[in-house]
Image (tube, rainbow, N blue to C red):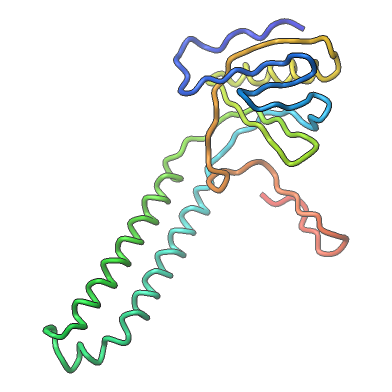
Length: 192
């Protein structure tokens, strides 16, 4: 199997070494024994933009509803006591907190809406762990899939390359197809 050419000469944001040595795949300091690797593949990791927008609407509506409910006990004081009563300060404080919460939810939504998709190489083990790395060159990752697959079948194979570390929140990205299979009734199959 030929060596994988190095990635382009641009400075990666966070380089990490990926190497196979003595039947072990190292991704930085994470260790994956080659015999426990169930799947190696590449895919486009896309942000969950629709879910982020809907979550913002849900949280903003909930915050406004809580603000109105929190304001209800002070309505009689505001109605009969006027703006000089102590209830006006309470109402202002409730709406200040509600506005701060809505701004926080908006910033959280914008972090997902402005996030870029990433072409990644994923290494899944027979357990529950998954390793993700990325590169500016998708062909580089496709070649790495071939090299790792080759190393699984050939124990004497060793190689070392530099890729980029991928740090993302799993709640903000799609990680491929979701297959929900619990028992024999009501299976939903693959949802997209």
